[in-house]
Length: 162
Image 1 (tube, helix red, strand yellow):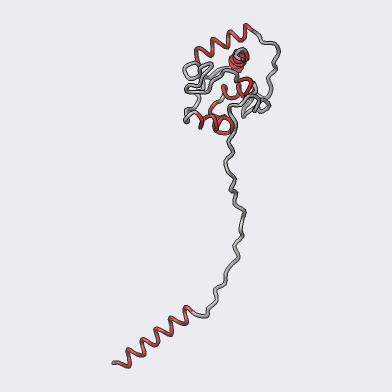
Image 2 (cartoon, helix red, strand yellow):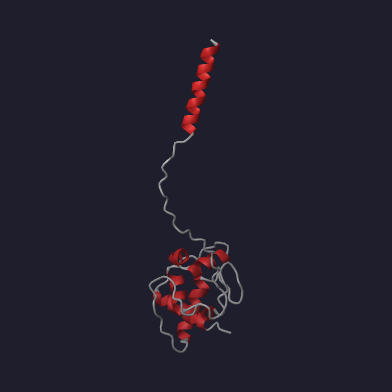
């Protein structure tokens, strides 16, 4: 019986050595791809003059500005008061950004694109995304303004420059 145990132990050890030993595994080469490790870039959303040529994401590609049209600005002020003033205050941050001097920080095209389609802007536009984060994720409500109404609001914003 002792010899059977010795032989079994010997064969087990031999199998263990053979299976772990000299057998070389074929390794297939793995393609390495560079990994992007870019740090997120903070987009300046407050300094004057920083985004005046950037038009944002949307259908508004060009806005012609001349002298301020007071009648149009008054219409824009009425729309702003009725639809925007619950979240935006002039001269201070509230639920949304302060809109005093907004036309020194943003292009008229960007402002119009943001008003017309805030959902698309906060999904695709880096400046709008940053503003959303800066204001605790409170998204801007789409007020369903027409292009003409939105243009009057921009004209009103032009009167808010210090």
